Image (cartoon, rainbow over all chains, first blue to last red; front, side, top):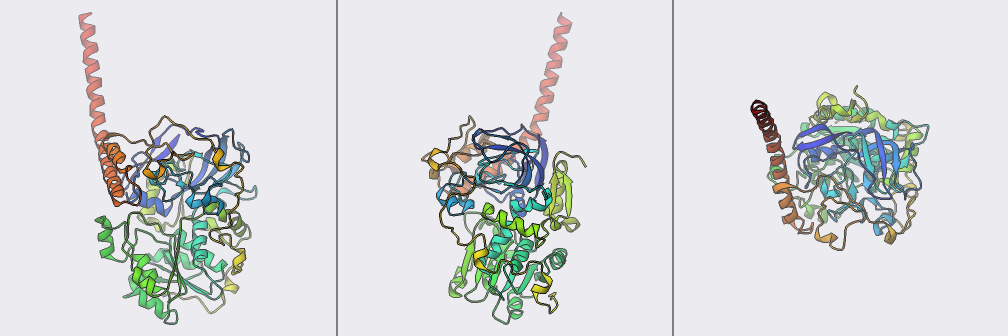
Amino acid sequence: MLAVSYEGPNRVTVTRKPDPEIQHPYDAIVRVTRTAICGSDLHLLHGLIADTRVGCTFGHEFCGVVEEVGPGVRTLAPGDRVVVPFNISCGVCFFCQRGLYANCANTNISSDLASGVYGYSHTTGGFEGGQAEYVRVPFADVGPLKIPDDMDDEEVLFLSDIFPTGYQGAEMAGIRGGDTVVVFGAGPVGLFAMTSAWLLGAERVIAVDHLDYRLEFARRYAKVETVNFADSDDIVMDLRDWTDGRGPDCVIDAVGMEAEGSKLQRVLGRMKLQAGATTALTWTIQTVRKGGTVSIVGVYGPPFNLLPIGTAMNKGLTLRMNQCNVRRYMPHLLEHIRKGHVNAKGIITHRLPLTEAPRAYDLFAKKKDDCIKCVLVPHTTH
Amino acid sequence: MERIGPAHPAERIPGWGSDADVTNRPGIPFPDVPHQRPGAHFDERAIPQQVTTVEVLRPPERAGGPTPVFGTANPPRGMSGRVKHLAYRYPDHLTRRWMLLLLSHRLDVLEARLERAVMPGVALTVAAGCLILLRRMWTTA
């Protein structure tokens, strides 16, 4: 089969690999019909996630058709259309029973940090990813969601990660009716955090980024207020001024470790004195009102980061965070898409064949051609 | 800053406030009341163990045994693999583990680049050698 292959920092190719096989009775093999490049794939691409091995295949956002199932699979059969959460979860361990699918104890052999994840380095279990023609899906009865016949693949593709991640970000922020919410990052996850903030009853939603085209997209797509921090002398003071001098009630970090905005942070990150840059996270803590909530869905790597934890303590903040427990949100968010509350596929700006994955990564990583979201289409050449 | 007009969001956002009631939020409570999840038709203690012939590294946190399923992509190899073996001796709360993994990643990239650069040369040399050998065999015959 054809699959994306990591060749070292800033370089991926498309190569031939052996087809995946059933390795466990609860496995399925899925023929991928759509797969997307996630912002967190860029952390892998840039060599920022530990134990990313040369030759591995990225991709944790995908949907497709079941080709084959193991002898222990009961709820899926060949021919079923499915969208697959990025977490690989057993459904029965201490954590899964509590809905913490992202913390499953039975799927990550390499580390105790998180569950297994498709195509996300050996730090999350060393599973091959979905940017390929076929992919092995463990615990096939637990993770995948069958796609209703009346919905197309692209409508539900983002239930695999970014819509639930954005929604969980808004939910963890504890939004109540009348709240003002600031979202740092107007990328795909940020956009879904903004639309989710509206679903939860926010009265004002403000997006912060440094790319004008992304802010323009956020205004149009998520109908939010926007601010470009590159145009501000002090974004923290400005956001406080625009929110009655107190600061917003809830702030969501949808940026993660590759934040712009502070040369010092970038240099410390590049020198590996910390795991990436915590600029956005620092701003969330400094911006939110006293007693407010900071919700973190941006990805940060181990082992440590520089953070103003004293500010958080003295302001009496609530800090909430996790990788998204995707499976918990999928049925609920599917209904929001079906009702027309959220146009999930509306964020797709580029569709390319899988064979053009290197160009897609280049577009997305370098923010070329006003790229918001790239979708790869396997089994096609145009 | 680009502001939105005075209209209340309920008038301009489809579905605004439809999950305002916290009991209608799928992630609350977090963590949830423990229960078996949909599709999980098996007992945790009865999950079959995946077996493989590929080398899969395990840190001290997994000293009790492998997880029931695991990935088998890209087993450790070469010098970078040796460093990975060393890294996986340490649990993930120790910085030395991550620093060793960082080192092994850089070595892995270097090894792959060398391989890419050297392999065509090796293949060419082997092919030329074979040709010379064949020619000699032909002429001596």
